[in-house]
Length: 306
Image: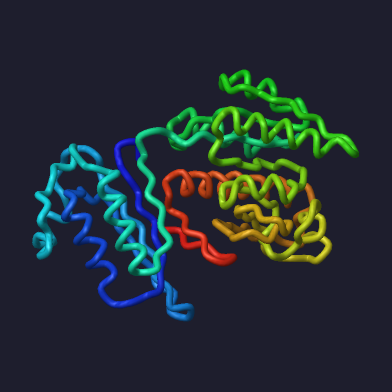
């Protein structure tokens, strides 16, 4: 990702969309690494993700497309790719097709803030994946309303910010948190078992850029004690869900889910232990896919490209 650009787009479906986008990329000399698409036939929508290199290499398009018939601009090498020039021309095409789109160069890692409370299994997993290079980002800070994660932050060399929250102090704590995130230039907030409800004002500052993990297979068993509710109900499957945060609690667009089979022999403690494994997996996947620009949100749903 650090030497490539990613284009995400969605628009009303029609014939020739792939050809129009591909031809324009060919015209500008794009060396395509990955391309994927999806159609929502019920809503008549088209979704596409294209990633191309910003360094010289044999292009997939060179082997599959003829030169654009209307092109009067010589194709440049991938190493000379003019991202701003392409963006300006693509904006005109997007306007013609009624397209929502975002173009992201991967020349610098995104800045991420990790929020947690007392439970550390998710944040410990994310930090280790980050240190091993699995998550390509800059973890700018760890924010918590408890001190449990302070030694973990010190071990990984990440700044730690303690923002205690008591009854009546949440607005002041959130104001401090938002000032910190703005100062650090944070682009993604990850709630790694942060057991506080964010205010609508906080959520509004990071549209589609706050990822939460819920210790339940949403939409079933929302709230703070889903494993207890699942055990009382006698379910045979438990799960975990990662989703984008919206103003409605536990109702944002779902990114990833996973499940584990249980039986009548399992007690609440067993469900909690197995559920924590699921929470680690679904949260890390969601964060990685977001960082790789593989997620398109529409309505209260997501398209996650392979």
